[in-house]
Image (tube, rainbow, N blue to C red; front, side, top):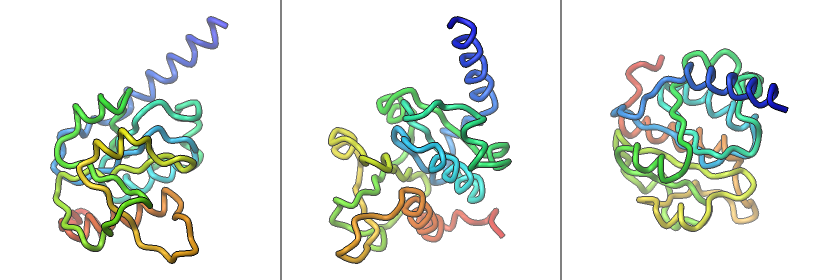
Length: 178
């Protein structure tokens, strides 16, 4: 109905007004391509808030994108998360400085063999499907986190946390961390 649509639109606009635009930061960041599980995105919001880096959310999401849905897993960390919202992958690329580094199980090179830079953005795909070929092809680099042969993959939040910690370690972007 019209009322529901207007209410959802107002709630979504309020959420975006709460977001901080950190696109021009010289610090590393995390990007999430069309997240499909709200709890994973909430956990990544908490992760990036704790590390003091921005998160780029590339729409569309596979769930209703609202503060109420995300707050369950992000808790009060949403209050100081640095969120950049992108309506499309193209919009994300146009607004993202530095290199975009895709984490994928299909990569040949490991995050341990790579030299990260301050303005790098780590990109993770959907938990269920990763990213489409055009996104992988457009990424500046594709890297993996080595795991045993029998295992298919890590949870996307776990992979993001491991890789983001490595980026921060290498770039020494940890002066605000205690």
